[in-house]
Length: 346
Image (cartoon, rainbow, N blue to C red; front, side):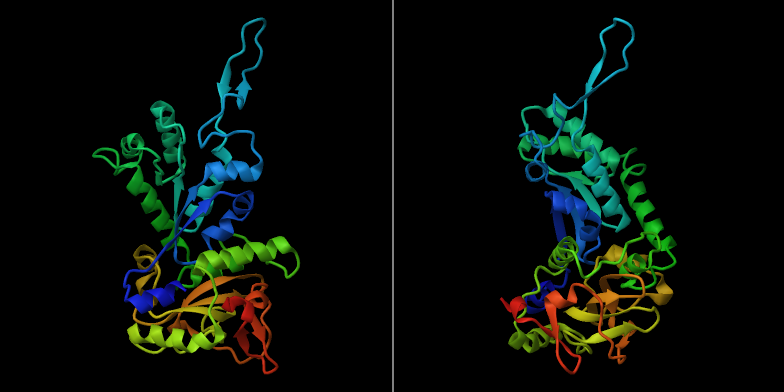
């Protein structure tokens, strides 16, 4: 859907997706969300809705709680010291891990008590130290606090913010499996750097998590069957050449052992510039060609892949794909072709 909008309105800069982590199910599937699409830009913590989703006994928006404390060990009859703890430490750390592992940015969410600037600044600083790139501000008074904590300054920015981004780039360049625009998903499926178990067809949690990831990746897959030809026509009007594969085409990678079915097409490269530059020059695909979103599988796993046209060939094996998400989006005809389900046309 995003590719369709970009093509229809002549948008040359890719539309990216920013997720808000605000449900218990989202936290449980945070890595799947962070890796759901090459369009992912980042993720922010939504503490108020997350607290409600978890059934937490607090109405505070971010920050600590006076009843969430630890006591020092007893020392005779001396009064034991007590310290208030951060309710969100675990969640922020898990979000940062998922974001950094997938090359996107993590952000702290809002701090609700804008009358307490000292506590707000401390919370922002904790998030910064844990790896967050920024934070939300609910009140004008918090803008200066966020700038104080997150904005690079002479003598500090070179050490902290750019250094962190440089580390992420080095990790990407150092991964010998990141050789193409689709390699991030190939890597996840084959267990290099990040081991991910294959999702089975059974279990509603697995299907719901995958469906959520697909929705995040594409802004919804509600393309009418009779409108698919028009969709591809609109895309190719702004493309430098016609897309070779249409929606429902079964393809395989010409180098690496995975295959999949096409569920979205970008007329040209629609990932971030940083990610594209991180691909080694000798294998970096051209931008002026279609890129395909696949429900893909290899021998060990299933995942969402993003691959250049030059690295795809038709899959003529006739074998059905195992990907659990396919049955939710496509139906397979007697001749083995995949067609968009009617339920995804509404």
